[in-house]
Amino acid sequence: MRNRRFFVVILFLPFGQLLAQDNFSEAFFYFNKNIQLHMPSGACAENDFEGNIAYRTYPGKLAIIRSYYADANFNLRKKEFSTPGNSKHVVGLGFYNDREGDFFTRARVLSRYAIHIPVSEEMYLSAGASFHLINYNFSASGTGASGSAWTWSGGIGTTLYSPTFKLGVSLNDFNSPNLRPVNFDFTIPRYLTLYGEKSQEVAENVSVNGASKLNLQSRSVSCILKLGLAFYETVGISGLYYVNKGIGAAFELNKIKLHNGLADLSFTYLIPGQKVSPSVSQYEINMRFSIDK
Image 1 (cartoon, rainbow, N blue to C red):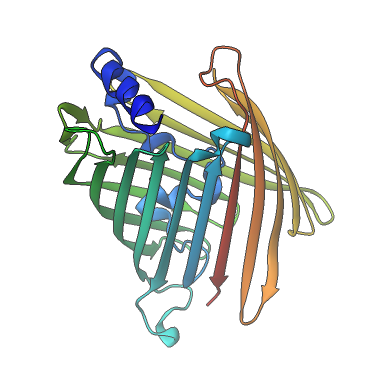
Image 2: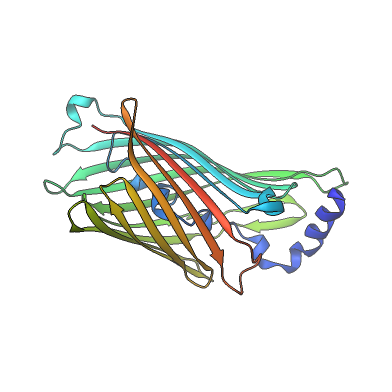
């Protein structure tokens, strides 16, 4: 049965342009919790060390289709030089895995560098670059049904930010590489990411926060909008609108004291639109541990 399902997928690959593309640009939908994945300049914007974990999947039998990501980023400057008015030099390393069932896996090993330069007392301008090693792997017992291929890619970006807003732009997978793990060519398209985030206090210990992410490819455009409330900077609830793909809701617990740092945790549920395939809800979990200056 496993080989039969794999044969059906391979049979229809040449007729499905969508399957010939990479899913990395749309890997996770609660984007403000993992924006450094597509915008290397966003790593360690508010801290000197951060570790991130993200996990997205479907409930039930489709849980076999899932994506997960983990990374660590830290400021290279010594603590005594990491004060307001001094620049930060941030390096990071991460791993991304996207599993499309039992047989097909897309993986990336990511490294990044970012410099954060103060332009005023509370505003910074950062620039970053990332380098990715990419692997596509088919694994099945049928003759000619297995194969693996490696390539490389990268991205560059810049972010202007303060404690209450962020504006960023990045160009990702700029070399648009090709892979051929089996008798079929996979194209990884380059894409441009535009990102914005703003928070505003509307009452004592209550703030409104909004964010948006726009991905531009040569043949497609995607947009996600988020609007939420935060209470005491700790508990947050948000609504999501994934244009033409669905709506969702998120619950957050932020700035939880843990040892000598702070932990953030969020859970997001996305309900698909009528024309989305597969028409099945998804959920996503994001965790972050950070250490401030």
